[in-house]
Image (cartoon, rainbow, N blue to C red; front, side):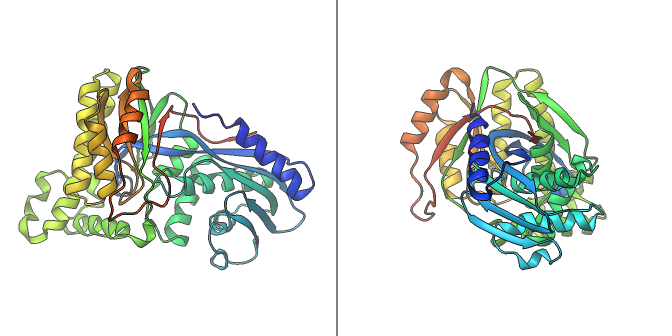
Length: 384
């Protein structure tokens, strides 16, 4: 288990050094990894993420103006006025500015603040470093303003920042996982009703995150194209979303829309896999759980076409190591991370074998080292 105490202490210390005062509070928000349910959230489907022990923390105090002055340990300083449009901010500060602007748009009397940001979430690894920053910033604005705004609304605003400001047409899974997850459990999210159900994870298995070190900007990939295809298929079949359709409903597509057929088939079957996997976890049917994870990866690779050479390679290696029940890519895809469900007694040896066997494919260079992490399901956002 990776503790966040050291990260919190670092943020407090650096805040004192940078701003020459004591921080009033610290917000901690975890990243997330999705066990199953990929590209289903923006189709009103089901997802099953856990919060990670990796976090983004903001040590903060109110300022005397509408200026937000923040320093990121990894990305440097940023400053902006809340009276200006968030489109004027660039880089990582746009997430903060967007949260402030969109909170104000929803009626919250946001105020300026000073903040020092530290994070140990691997950036760009499909582990929701951006959603963690959004939620941490949202909670900072809420705390400074002493506003009575539900966490669910902050999550919705985080999604709006991704969709409207950053140009990624993602769903709400990441923000909800970062906000509402609990230690020791996965969070089953119905993205249509926004109902949340805790699913306790068996203690005999561990989740291993396998970061290939490859990176891809989702706004520059075919991510948005996938969503547009799903919406087109839904509309052509008279449905509000793919959640409302069955495999039988797709029969009319046939060879007329082969791409749409495959994209929709993934979403419909993936929704069922989420529900089936929850039952398997509840019944401790771990072999079947692994088979479902493997089937998810195959569908993402063949039907939805969002895997990549590095993801396929590390998943194949993992699936053939003793103690592994199943493995799949996780997150938006194309690059980044995969997960494996591993018998806890085999975790150390599993990580060694995968690390020794995996080499990044020549055609997909890595931007960061390959890292494997055995993680525990952790708690969601908090204010200290």
